Length: 288
Image 1 (cartoon, rainbow, N blue to C red):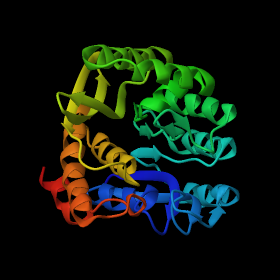
Image 2 (image 1 turned 180 degrees about the vertical axis):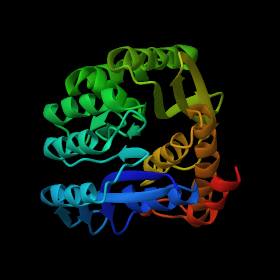
Image 3 (image 1 turned 180 degrees about the horizontal axis):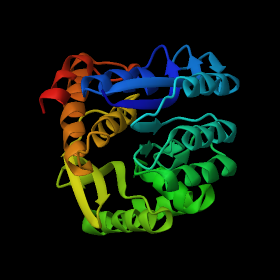
């Protein structure tokens, strides 16, 4: 069975990070091997949370895995608390990856034109180094701008983008995808969660850059933003990429899966911090 090392935090409540990645990757017929970067009572979107930083423990876990002659087929990195953790991720890649290891980096740094509190110029620079080592990256629009420009310029570019609409808006985002590829030489790029108004309704778009081709995958936008949807999306991609499935096929699979889960969360009136109702649709990842 193929194995993916998942380097992310473990949050008891909120259905994100490792609690999202492990069931999704497992449902796709791949073993998820978690290396926690932190243990939290709940994800940080709630009013309060307890966090136990695991950075100091990561070396000991890596040492034990090296004794086991561990060679994962894939490496998936998500939320990082700072540049020190990013250094540990880079060390992990150096110690455990080979030419055949498929690496997915989700450069979690911000959303909706705002950098998260954990953002720093140093963390952003480490994310750029990680991106250059990946086969696939999954930034949202804010994170794509951060990778290219940093925080101050991202905020200016975000305002300019929001003044565009229709095809002009999509074309500017396509330029960002090409720029990311040129700068970091990443074979597969997905700019996720792009809000797009079509007529009187709203669509959620994902821009795929793969093998020199740009493709949009749209779905009807339902509800607002929910905890963990980006983690679920990236986990579908990572679970499939180690099996040789192309990124476009995986994006379609992820969109179908998430669409059902989000609709159920909206109908149940689930709080956004609690995440989406994905569990009963895990079987679709295997059947699809």
